[in-house]
Length: 244
Length: 298
Image (tube, rainbow over all chains, first blue to last red; front, side, top):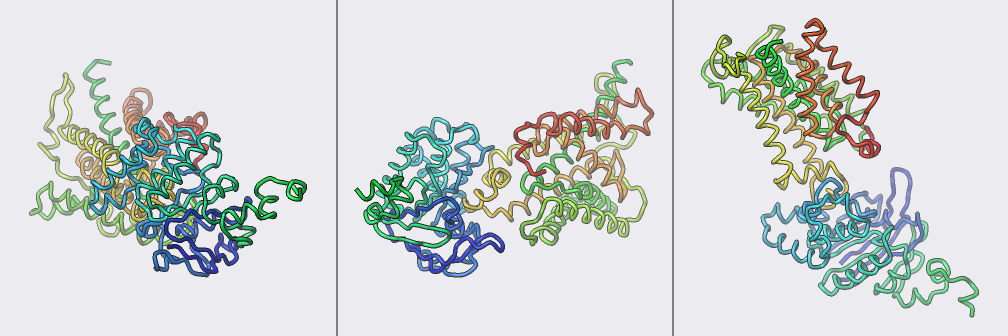
């Protein structure tokens, strides 16, 4: 579904991604873990078209999307839940969701979009309750649900999520990760970025470990769980425990 | 002061004020989608009036059509300005864009000077003549005043409805709230900026047409108007259209009643004093929230 080959990207002259390759197949949950500054967000922003890749190839649905604008990439079915949620603070919850389906409304698929709105409401009932509230007044967890809902309104084939657990109460993080599994069952493919490596590997099929702009390790979630380096660096276990 | 004189001042105050409000709303629309102040806003007003005057002088274009054409042409100019001068700049700084709009303002003013010359022109009154008047509660006012109030009111209401209920209006507000997130929803943010210039130009031009019979029109009257509109936008709190209406009416009334205390020639001083006082004591505007302005770049 998504193939990234030898992708380089960054901001101005600062090169953050130094030749990254990865792929996501239909129906998978793939996670990318790594420390702050490893380039996780840059990678997703590059795939989503917010940053233009310096070199390399990004193929989505057999189409090279490296040179396309963010607007066109969403239209192809690749949606991003951006880092720190980025909901439209000054708009209501409902308006936020409606705008998620902007392209569907533009293409006169109003009914489908409104159906989708109902399914988002059943996925996150709290959004229905807060429908007419300004998005900026929601709690962090609710905003995250809204951001996910907004991205889903575009009916993407691939949903990319940038740190959905960032700054959110643990209980809500659980709900959100459960939702991710539900989404996969509904046929959405997911590319998930997380600092919370444990939670991410728990629900993912495969994972990549990113360090200073390069993939240093890849494998199934099980393999990564069992890998000593991963355990030490990202799962919070020290040398002693590993050696025991 | 007798009641009818009070009413006279009051009505002339809100008439001028409603025009300030419309100009300020023009500032706000562009500010909200781009974060810049378009100093060519006043030129839109004058261009609208000058085109309409030219059309009515041909003798065979009826007034409503003349206004419609003038608004359409000015809208086109607004779009052209954005496409030619603003769109292609990658990651522009706010300051750079503002200086560009000042340049555009000078260019369009001088172009208007060449085309229309220095003469003071005037649109015909929409109804009646310069001497006809309507008596309201004992005060006699020109019918044009009612046109100005009515049409500015309609502009404000239609814009509110547009931004609140249409998909495009919502998309423009989304761009203002978070440009990147808007693009991720598939909204063409650059298109929305062009559109905001077009809407600003259109309402500016319409404002120019409706006031021209009262205030008259000359090629260089745009800048003073832009300054007043700017004062109103700042006083109300940038980006807030309701505040612009209140601020506009307030400034109009203050100017109108200031005649009682200071000579007419110093009328403009009132606006600048208000601006200074607001900037000293409440830089986020009367209605602006402190937290909100802290997040803004400008």
